[in-house]
Amino acid sequence: MKITFRINNDLSELDALLDQLQVLEQKWALSRKTLAEICLVLDELITNTIEHGDGDKGQPIDISLAKTGPKLTIKIVDAGLPFDPTVCKSPDTSLPLEQRRCGGLGIFLARQFCDHWHYNRLNDKNTLTLQKILPEEHR
Amino acid sequence: MQTTITQEKNTTIFALSGRLDSNSAPQFEQQLQDFLREPSTNLVFDFNNLDYISSAGLRIVLNTAKAYKSGHYLFSTCAMQEHVQEVFEISGFDSIITIHSSIDESLSAVKGRE
Image 1: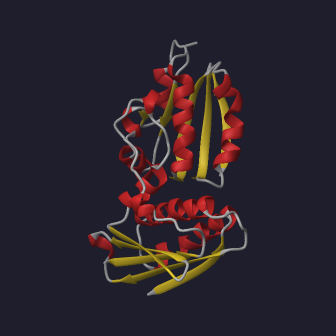
Image 2: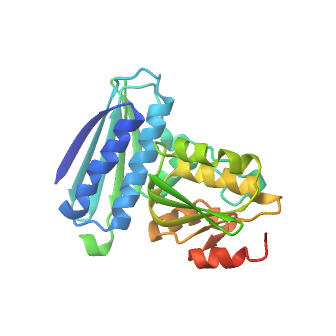
């Protein structure tokens, strides 16, 4: 079971994409929680791609989601500047209020909600492949 | 995302509905401007109808908590859905942000804080 999308590097198109993903709740029998997690992962990573890109609007971002039994594989491909989220520093989540900053939090959250991720730079494109193992009741 | 603002004695309640993400965050931040600049009431974010929060939303919550930290008035959040609660916990926000299970609890906590 596979679904693909292409959006431009524009936050309003990301918003429309997250709306469209709601169909997966029914289609792939996902729980609201699992769907929210998938949306969060995509939201954080694609927002970073849009914000760290070279600002040239009209650049496509290709997203695919494939489900095989309990395994969900997500791929995000864009032709923006080289950007590897897997090497970004995690924020220190134990700091007290006054010292907390939000830098790196988005990518950190995305990583927490998937089980594996792998970055590749090939043919001038950033390719991020993510895997999420779905909980028992959704296999 | 929809924001409904109500007043309960000396507490302002922002009830959020929908998604608080990079798309809706700027508008929400704009609505909070006056509260962040100079807190003059207690503040509660009612998350009962909030389906989802991303780091853009967390940033606003963090900045609000900072603005309220050393003042007379209190800031709290309440009624989080399971997934939103999990995001707060994973980010370590549950130890720096006041989280109540219901709006009643949040309002009880500010009784006397006029």
